[in-house]
Length: 242
Image (cartoon, rainbow, N blue to C red; front, side, top):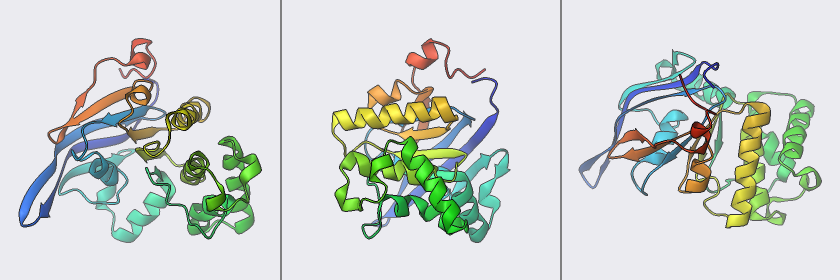
């Protein structure tokens, strides 16, 4: 991993919200780096701001202070239109709830980011078919969302996030609504995508089994990130930063 350059750098990011007239400081100076092809887990108690951090990383929310740099470029210096284009081209999102469009089938849902990018429908379909086959849905391409199991729906959501080969995958509790067996299938898929395709990911999870298999694990505590001591991949030397 040390041979890969820094893809994402977060510098002193702070974010607060006002609820019922009270200001709540959620992120209190978060700083960390993610190298290309690294997979980073973010864990922590419910309500501490893990999803808020992911939304800032994904440029869905602007921080109150601090910088988020992709390949050294401060993306919050962009205007809203440029930021939306950057988001479409650079970041793939997977959430706990798959957010698939019920009126479309697996293939059509997966094509959406490519069509939004302005890619021709035929090419968008080809790209969507390729990634759906990669996630094990070769025989489910034209099944409607309601005809897919929960695990299949989440695999479609993962395919949709990866159809444009984004620089980084951001996943917020991607198996939070799935049973343990299906969750393990998704975990294995994420790991194989990293090993085979070099996918870079930041994954918010409560699943410590998954977190322990990633390159690095950090805990969000009182608004800051704290490294978690040596997980299995770090102990073996895999994913170590130097």
